[in-house]
Image 1: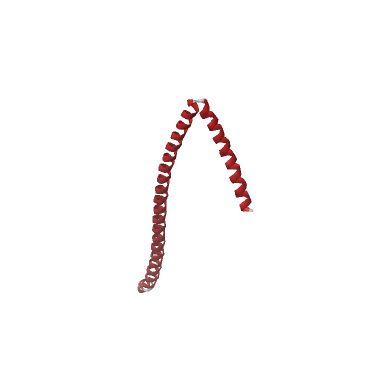
Image 2: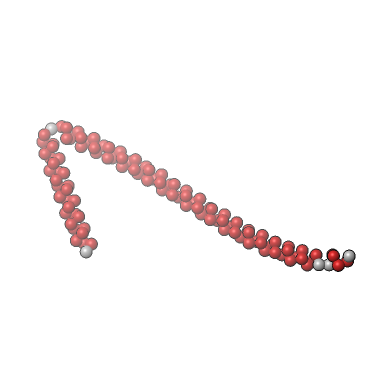
Length: 109
């Protein structure tokens, strides 16, 4: 009966060392996951701030465009002379667009 108690100490030591090694591996993995989660959270906050800034930019652009459309409509309704000026301006803008397009396409070659 004395043989039963002899081998248990060595097995316990081996199991204890293995458990410590596994616990250290688990702790390092948890630490990496925590760091990764922190980085994801920080990136999400940065992107939310960027999107909020874009939202305010779009709102200001919408206000500018709304005001421009109102002024344009008022000018078109005012008289016949303004319509001629607007036609000349529109034609000039279209011509300017095609001229710039031609120049940019020539520069890219």
